[in-house]
Image (cartoon, rainbow, N blue to C red; front, side):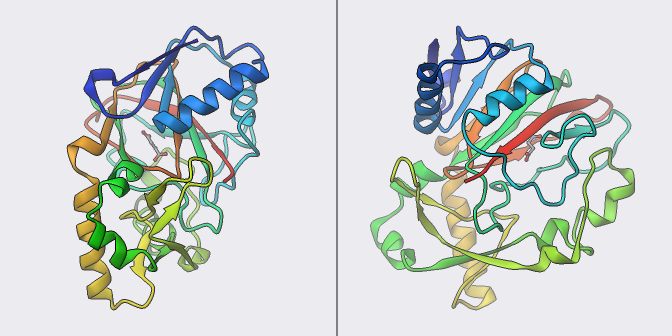
Length: 277
Ligand code: SIN
């Protein structure tokens, strides 16, 4: 197995080759992949021809399936969600604003995996931002001033009955289910220790972090805006340009991500599985 880091000079993310994911893997191979994933935060395996069952078997090497609220799985597999947008669709790309998956849950997923099936000839990249590296570089006095604060997370902005997906459900090919329950709140420390690497991360994101416990809305909005400005500097970003038949997995505890558009008139389809935190 060969791990290539610093692709296109990015500071994180790695390509893994020399392994066939359609085959069962040994414990040694699984451990090696797990280490590479924690260290590099985003890893991808190009040129993998795998079935739904092989994709699911690979994902389950890393834990139990995660909870996937607000998205219906594909009929052929209970735990695979189709991330799709058709050539004729005019909706915003699903996941098109910076977020970490399901951060409004008590236990957000540790890992998300995407397997690319149909990739447009232009656009449709996925961007990742390292909230771990951004946290390491945070100015010490700022870090100290936020170390005891908790972010308030909720699914309300996208998934409530009046949320932004609710307004365009009819026109979307993705199977999204909005709900009143999306207004529930869940607190997480803003500086969250990664439970495997033990490194601190900045656990906030513009889609699901709707406030800061014990701060006014204005104070919270201003602090969050300055944290996002810090995290979204080029040096903390990895841009993934897809090719078909690539399996990519990210550490949802140490990166935010967003899906870019720019491919109107073309189909895009990826299969997605989350693994519980
Ligand atoms: C997501 O946020 O899970 C979607 C990412 C993508 O489609 O690139």
